[in-house]
Image (tube, one colour):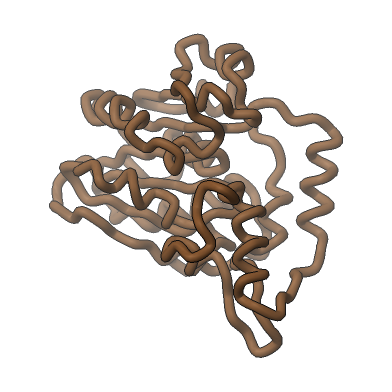
Length: 250
């Protein structure tokens, strides 16, 4: 099943821009970045198992990359900008095996080092049954925490809508818990396999991808000043120079 997506700034030209959000979030997190006009069509999907997109029977980087690749019509040049998990998927799409003509990619805030304890915790989260909340407010609070957006996006923001689901027995967070068990990526291998321009970036204060981790994997990695993990929400203006580089590299 094709992943639903929200298309914005459709000027019909190339390259298309594909924006991939991080684990737990939805495509709505890119809202403020879209104030920057892109010369081609922009695709903003909810990742599989997130928001309005269907769930997968198994979550691997390959299965998720294959699903989001269906969003872009064949034959289009595409630039991919991804955050965290979305950054991993961006790098996967850049190896040419998913049917996309990817000219440039940027992964922002990819977690590059995983301890055994962190992987065990992620597997535990993936195995938990879904929680049902009595009220929308409780579900929203949980979604903001799960997506890492607590304190960055207010609970009454319209961007929250796709993050929660109403059902006959109550409210749920619109994230399949199984997605949290996707595992740790081999980013150096993905960078080696990627074709075209590749950029890694992270916020200066990102606890998941601190500058020393970033520069160990990519000496030319871009440190974005005065920002944390969710750069695209905290200060999307800092990503504009990277978007210029991606566009110029086609």
